[in-house]
Length: 90
Image 1: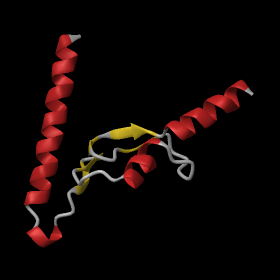
Image 2 (image 1 turned 30 degrees about the vertical axis):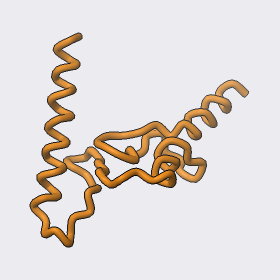
Image 3 (image 1 turned 90 degrees about the vertical axis):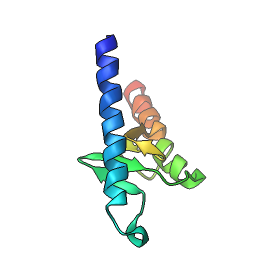
Image 4 (image 1 turned 120 degrees about the horizontal axis):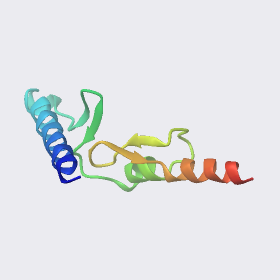
């Protein structure tokens, strides 16, 4: 299990480095500090309440897995998860 954790840590580190390198290759005026590296989303902008809510509690987005408000990877839209769980029980 420790090997799996280390592997995941190295992969995440590599994705962060790749995302930063992707941004630094652009001219300073074109850097957005958010996008995708391979198929993994990243966002290094200062998080806002709106982006946090859009990632973690968004009734308007049907997806359960959404891009994170800050960092690399995905978040779970808890609203949609809850809604679907309640549909299963009803």
